[in-house]
Length: 268
Image (cartoon, rainbow, N blue to C red; front, side, top):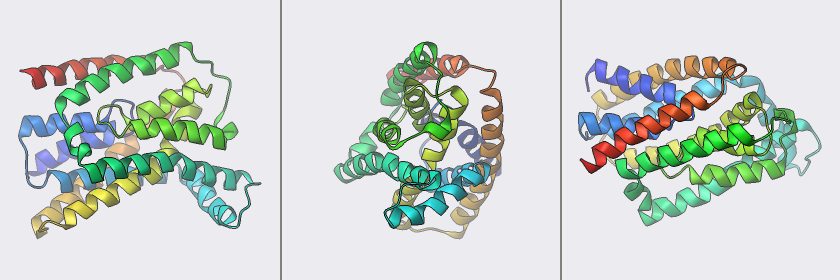
């Protein structure tokens, strides 16, 4: 793959990974335009991992708190805020891991990855995001996130295994429905992305390793991961600042437009 194509793939993935507009929809669109390639899966894994490093770095203090609380959870203690955060992230990850395993073992996960499904999901869950933003209260902060909230958001996160739903979009929506303000909803949603994205990357990486991996592919994947990291960090920092002043409406409009484009491609 040319350097230009790598840059487009990485930048698009990095920017869209944490915005509620579905990175998978954009990756499918890029592959639809450029045509299928043998290295598509490996590069998708690379850009996803580059993106998740960005979120770990941006929320490094919360990540450090969760890691500190993990030992307490293992010892059976949930008294500290660090332990509650670690337990919450674990609980929120379980539904998606279980559903993901079922989809992967059944082969359904590959059937869902097409422009028709993604197009409809972009539109439907974009409208859902708008409704949650428009009508849900903003009375809670991230520090109030509890185990019940984690379970509810984790169940919604499992729905995002259907491409086009958007993991960040559905977790933001569910957090808003639970009454969290926009900034807190985004903070919790981004922290939830870390374990599930790592799990997904490991699963896809296993598929990649079953195929021959040449030196050119390793080089391209490394470049893509670095570029995705840079784009993701910038996009994440910008979104977290803008959420204090800007609503989710622009993302909803964008989702609907892209959904229509994907459906037009699918039905043409």
